[in-house]
Image (tube, rainbow over all chains, first blue to last red; front, side, top):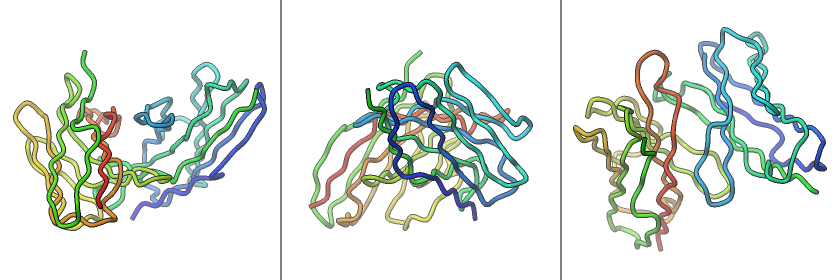
Length: 114
Length: 115
């Protein structure tokens, strides 16, 4: 079944620096890769996603890259701001529920220091 | 357009009891998925409902069950509660078809504490 591994588990950066979070997946049939941001005590919110027919997608300060051959995808945040501090989750379809269901990574706690 | 709403927001139960959690999906969505999020972990898929039927299930025992109603709202029921069931239960709605089933909109969750 699908397995999604996420690294690092914690990441601390200075305001203005870049942050990169990486995920690997096991099921080569997976075709959709979202990233969610969860602030303390709040719901996960979709911040960016990518489908398997493209290699990169950008939305202002955030971008996602996908390497289907290596089965990994990454979240890139540039010019980080304190409000970027949160837990970030990657996900991929698959697992015992099938391809209409998402399997989540364990999360990366990002801290942006002023 | 209304978002995903869940109730109750917090509840405390004791071992062996039963609990029902409720979810109203986002307007225009027809699919509801339930996830369990233990403290410090990622959401774990419990099951999904589409057209009022279970449409896939994760590695959860049968004492976790659910329903979907004609208006696409949903319930999660957990029987014979165990201490390890303490978690945040997240409901997410989506629109099946054209690859939209995985584009999830989450509710704020129901935090269950089992004593």
